[in-house]
Length: 308
Length: 307
Image (cartoon, rainbow over all chains, first blue to last red; front, side):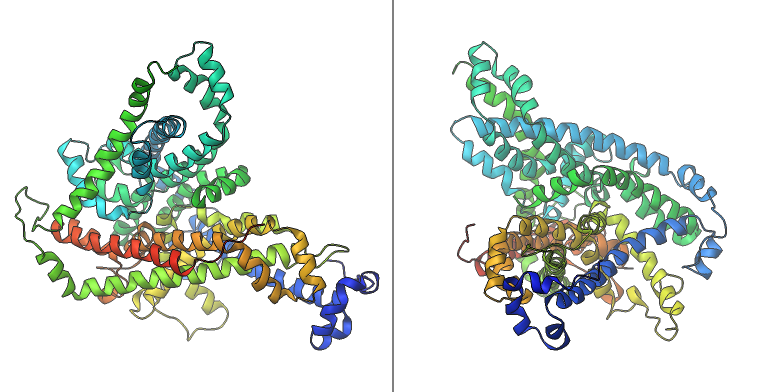
């Protein structure tokens, strides 16, 4: 934010001259640093506006969760008259947020472990062993990434129904694992290929079985990859909405996102808006905390995850 | 060393493959089969009806509306989202004031911006949709409240209740929640472009616009293209389902003004008891998705630039 930079124009002429000739009007007269300054203000201005637009809804939600219903309706942007913590306790107990949390933790915990275990087992075999059908199975797995899940959901509903897994948490766990496998296998196969072979070979020569080599040598070496793909899957599974909406309609088994939407719909008749906002903020908090602590890893994990 | 290799391979692949086959592959195959039946989903009985469902689909106004909206989502959303993201990422990485000797500089606090921009990405799309549903509320929502506060009492749109506006409101929410992801992605890409390229361009007298279109964008093209496919698939699938189903009222907005293909599949199957017909629409969705990916890959193909 320094404003006394003008001498730059004289000290690095080679860099500046060309654009002086090009820059229009006042910027040209004042030289390079003038243009830089204007641009700097301009960039920051726009960047701040977007930052504001991104953060504002969140602040508004937190604020609203501490207001009374009357306060919400009369002046949506006013600060709460005092912090109505009773909204939060009401949401936690009466609106069943505690149950939704528990269900989500059970489902996501189970599927995350299952996804990482099964995903790394399949990926390891596909990356490290030559056998007939290897390519076919690999493409079978990664083909699942580009298909619209909605298409499979209708028959899947009846598959689950037939094996009595509909409306059960463990049924949901199995489905989450299955739908997380395409990306997980894709990512981890690439990762296992990059690991050196010599260590695994040494373990095998020393008499370790393939299974033992995998669990005691390769899996620990794959930790960075497992963390990336784990973050990706954690967020995806924690935020899953479509699968539970279709496959899990028992009110006692609802997961967070689903339960909240259900509440919002039924709130239309009951009208506990402040409690609903408290629930909404409550549901955001865990991922936000995780994000702000591990934001570097989350950003790296998700972006590496999505496109490579 | 080969001893037990096949047993190991089979042992390790059995469980993942079985799960995947049962819950992913098998339903996909079944759904194509069901699209040729009159199955209601409520009873186990159905008969083959050949292409009846497909003929019906071509005559179905709601299908055409859903298709139209889904295509709009797939084309417009990536355009706006990726455009904004490129703009922000370029400003973050190149838009800063030049310090002595450096050809390009990011703005100060760029890591702060990246943290803030990215955060909607970690929220559940369902929660984001709920939040904006409240914000859009015409009487006591935050947006109209803000308009009132700055003296625009006359401008109080119905937002989600207005058939002409609802679809755009829903799209805006998806843009809001995904731009940050691409800002981070493109920033990483831009950071890996060698600085000498910018220095050379600067010596040749290139301004920022030229630099962006001649250097940054071409070198980032692969990432932009895969981002386009990724965003399009999201917009055709789960994300658009969630926002439309949660935010807009009734059967996909006032007078089906916001309905999209995945929502229509869901409604036909689980609300109307027409599982067979629903899978037919699902097949159409699959065709659209694959065609979209193929077209983007084809149109976007350029000579690969190495650096």
